[in-house]
Amino acid sequence: MATTDATPKFQNRDFRPVPQPPDFHPEVVVPAHDGLRFWQFMIAGSVAGSVEHMAMFPVDTVKTHMQAMGSCPIKSVGLGQALRSILKSNGPLGLYRGIGAMGLGAGPAHAVYFSVYEVCKKFFSGGNPNNSAAHAVSGVFATVASDAVFTPMDMVKQRLQLNNSPYKGVLDCVRRVMKEEGLRAFYASYRTTVVMNAPFTAVHFATYEAAKTGLREVSPESVNDEGWVVHATAGAGAGALAAAITTPLDVVKTQLQCQGVCGCDRFKSDSMRDVFRTIVEKDGYRGLIRGWMPRMLFHAPAAAICWSTYEASKSFFEELNDKSDARVVT
View 1 (cartoon, rainbow, N blue to C red):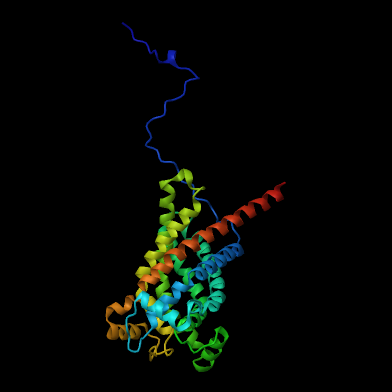
View 2: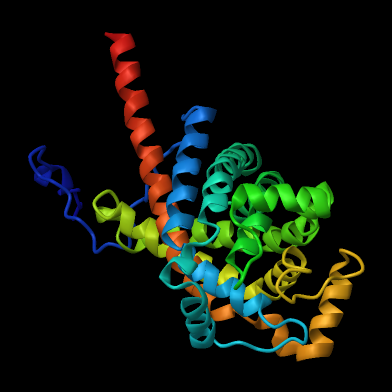
């Protein structure tokens, strides 16, 4: 008996294929901001950096006290003890001493920081948003450039933050340091700062980009609705991890920037090795992690604020550019 294929009898254009149980993962579309102009990256970075550092400045003051107080001889200072000491000596306003120097330095430095990062990321990633190595390398380039701008004001800021600081304000500090110690004093910690911030930004940017992508994949359908949550969460995790890893270098940087002020040691050279050795001799290896808690308490929310502000600023400029392009077309 001959067999015939009955399949064509049941074919109908109105039928729709039955969806199969999905093994399928929706593609996550990463919003592109690479179309922004260079000056727009600079403004977005400047706004983000200023908001971040101003909001978290009191925590930074406590960290500076923990890393610099009583360094001759070195004496470990707890979080509560440092806070009480600041309030006792200068009152609540003591938590904000040096904020003027931060205001002058944070904006320009972060403008350089983020604009260099975006340019390098575009160059090194080759259009691949998941290239962690490119993000890390771009972060290193960004910090080398921005630290050259920020280090002098960071030194002024930390000297003003110390208890019983001999300086009346930002201009007085700049004038006296220039007269008594010379221009070199403003950059005494630059090498240490770069050595610290290079791994910090490498870990920070790579972790942030990876966490951001991971969070978007968890809930791709709500990426647009919860964009700020994604940026803040990824930023907080990246900031905390990077801060914990680089605390020893931050202690060395603080010692170099505050040397000779309020009883802090003055070092024969700006050698990181000499500072490391001095800290270990006087306070053991635990001296290298002084201030780790306020440092993490600073960088986790600071990074969350910074990244969410930065990404929001980029989105604002992207919409502005789209409207401008639409007007040109019509």
